[in-house]
View 1 (cartoon, rainbow, N blue to C red):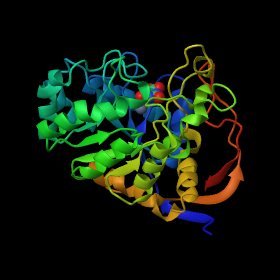
View 2: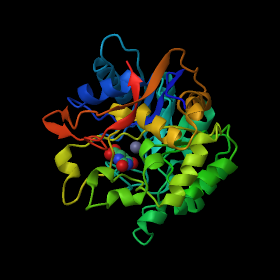
View 3: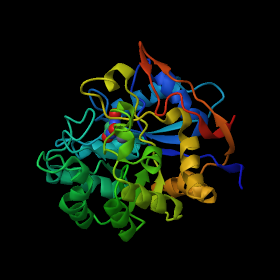
View 4: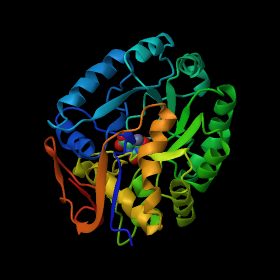
Length: 345
Ligand code: DOR
Ligand code: ZN
């Protein structure tokens, strides 16, 4: 039995840190574990210019505790009318990617894309300059069942997009289905990758309903049935370089999650690498964690792998039940529960 493992410091290729006072809670959690993180731009209003991204990056860096080395990797929010000229400025500012949210798909996505064709001039500039496209892959049509929205997106949008921009690097974010895992496996790994969250590796959709409605397990794309969770586990532990870690840790004030119309998003940044270790260990594949968590994402983005290491130990511990979140409380996923793996500081 492996009860401790040392791996290259991982990166989080999909993270929400919000803005203002909450930064001082959530950024230290991520910076304690990860070398870098892709910072999602869905603020209100969204980050749509290189200048805004640089200012946001400075605010994030101010929240990194002294002594920790952490690099936020900035993204812009793709809209129907984000001009192609902004892509040149983004490249110069070190912005690494744009995020495509179909309008109305999730938290703060009102400004999202209504028709991907409207963004084609911008996507061409991205393909030319080597800026990645990160995709929230769910259709939004009310006539498509919520659980089928990711699979429908592949046929309706992903395949045409892939065909029209063969050399654009695209990440299918937070995949949740067997269909998405299979589709990504069939793509050229130089240009298509996918992130997988810890919660989609650990839980199926029953978790949302066991013993009553449990809003902290509600996120988008929503948890799916067990066969999909197993397909994601197989993809994550396979060592296939197309799949890498992206927590989609998405903090919300507890009172807005525990609400008649609760927000989508699971907060996992406080114990992210531990939850991935648990999922890999449950599958008998802890030895594959390093590729998924520390190598595949950096390689796909064309960035150097981290050089420092972290150590994880099989030892129960109970994270705090809640954290301060500005004036509000932040309840992490599995609040109050003991976790079987722990990162040694
Ligand atoms: O559950 C989610 N929460 N899914 C998303 O796509 C957005 C995120 C958020 O920002 O809260
Ligand atoms: Zn997200």
